[in-house]
Length: 100
Image (cartoon, rainbow, N blue to C red; front, side):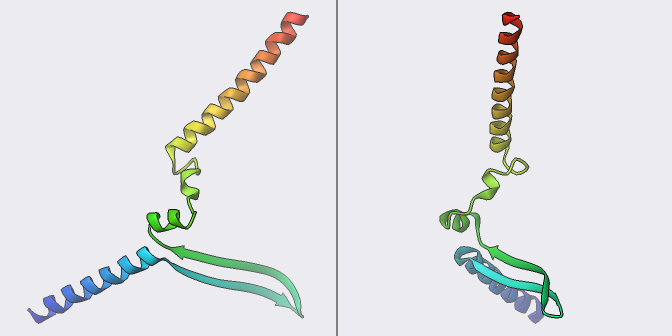
């Protein structure tokens, strides 16, 4: 029975920690460089931000809203723009046919 209580306390602590991290946000950064004889061949910069959606939006990060794979509104806007361009091209072609 003591194990169940300890497990419940650990879960609560983990939930509290996760809530704090998501509320405040945490940044993990690192760089990987590959060099041969002091010649840099490759540099990879890794930046990871862990935060809640609300905190990310507060910081001005909202890339998922414009990603067509994640946001149906973005996909609709993209399709509307494509339709507009196609209609304009069709109108231009119609004008050319009438002029001939």
